[in-house]
Length: 390
Image (cartoon, rainbow, N blue to C red):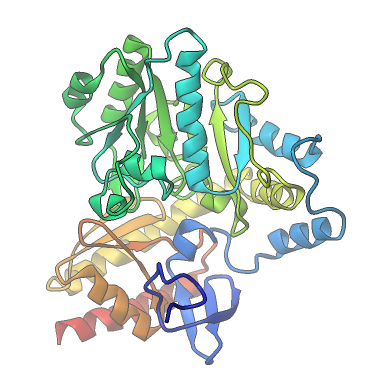
């Protein structure tokens, strides 16, 4: 008999009832250090007091009106994102997949509005993950996500990341955009070289196509800068963000320049819940935190300390771990043992990791993790590694 909740997840045998900072407490009394942060969502810790207060205050006033009417807090959040980015305009929705869908539609509409509807194809990259809608699984190109859902949505051409000549060869008269994660998450914490992102920007400018960054996982301070592409000194035309933008409340956004969004006129796109007052209250509370320059300085300092300690762990357990990769607090442990074994044993020791491609275990702790929480999590991870050496 099928479960009441559709069984599309292989869930761990635990249910959490509350959290505080980087700690989670299960219904059976167990306590965990959360090095996964809900897959880079709970970037400000569990039950962050500032986010909780913002949500409670808004819940007492207004939950939903629809986008038929102005939502002042949404306008405020859009202005703050614009002030801190390359963008001129923002569309709010509920998830990363929706944000990427909006980005793809925006790029296609840009060309159609200029009399070139044949320019609809998007170049994407092997190892990418852009969501679970029909369009975004086609963009990601992974067979395990495409299997059983009929013909893949047309319009996506995949190449190897880092190979600018392969990208150039893939550009045709039908190409609308290039879509890339500055740091691949599901793909195994693969950081794109700044020179490659710079070359993509130059190629897009040269050929008249748009550059889209998917920063759903790597954005909002995760790498130590507000947006990961800042490390490369390049800007996109369109960008998708989500996850940490809502700090745990469902919230995504598509940011774009005025030119790139010029085809997105009234009626071109919509979302029932996107940008509702509850989400906007939390999003503005998140911006209260990340707009403070001192916050990102602390993230970079924490990231440096964590990476140093993880490197020592790799040296201590060379039969279990091969190396550390990533940027900021978006970290991958390349494993010698199956990464599923490391995440399983770490779970048994009370620390949560997230699996990824290329036999990598992801560490995506809250950006606000304390020294004590970090050290306790590393102690438990060390015990897991020691168990796997036996």
